[in-house]
Length: 206
Length: 181
Image (cartoon, rainbow over all chains, first blue to last red; front, side):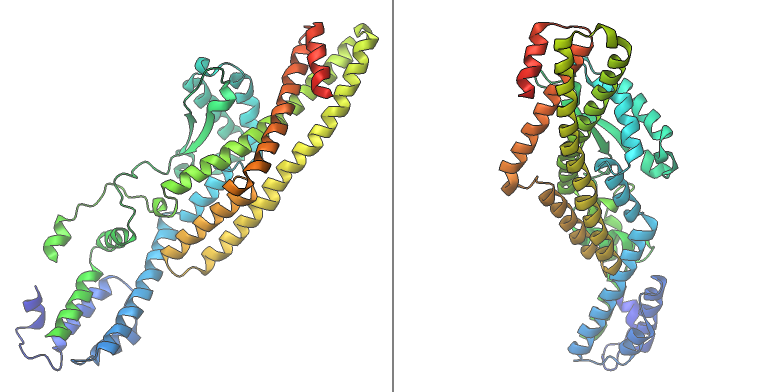
């Protein structure tokens, strides 16, 4: 792969233009990550210019961060989910809470072991439809559910009832590591910036 | 590198919100939910018993014995105090704690330059909420007192409900008077 990029060139100063072009083309696929400024810096890169390389890497990482953030915010609705968590888990949506209380109250007065999840789910659906929560997008509404805690003797329904916001569905699949997330996104974009960076590094080394 | 690229197994349908709202956060949200839900329950119980009580008074005015009337009057007075406390607590949590923390979270997120900033901002937001809602470990004593207060209010509500449900037993009246004092 790298041999191809270097065009068979063995001596390394100055870095082969075609290799750089390919690298830049590659990076362009990522769309807007490589600014003209960085491009110019890449073209003037010479062997031994570690400081310049460091600078380029910092600039690239800043633009990748910005792009990643933009992607997460716009395509995955992080803001909407946070707001939904506030509305439902922290009871910020007052009319919904009142509807839910009125529906679920008589049911929760029973003993904990006499509660039926399907009754409560039905009431929750009703409350979601009856209040302003109905105007939430479907990707929010689908996540709201009911969780019943482990009941101990003498508990009433009130003690074990809890709302749930199912954000943890594929949690076991996604590693917590930020690095993995970043790599994942870049692969998602159809191309890997780490490959591009690696090429730059290899080019300089040669 | 290419070989790594293709052997890397992409997780099915990744939800990046997870990275911001990770498992720790979910449990914090649950803790806050329980506190708020209990408070809302108390508030709801108070208004429900007020409704029942008022209805009872209107329909059975002529049949209420004078001794009980005095008890009912004290119930009203005490409920007003309890409502005052609970409503204030509720308003404090909803407006002073949640809304201000949310506001600062919004500001931090709008200034964020990378995803890590968002994650730290969200973590800080949750800790702030828990701290100011008296749920942090160093507020345990105060939180216990608040919970005890709510417990007393709930007992009052259940007793009054039994009273109004027509079970005018002397025991219920006695227990109610005990709670009131």
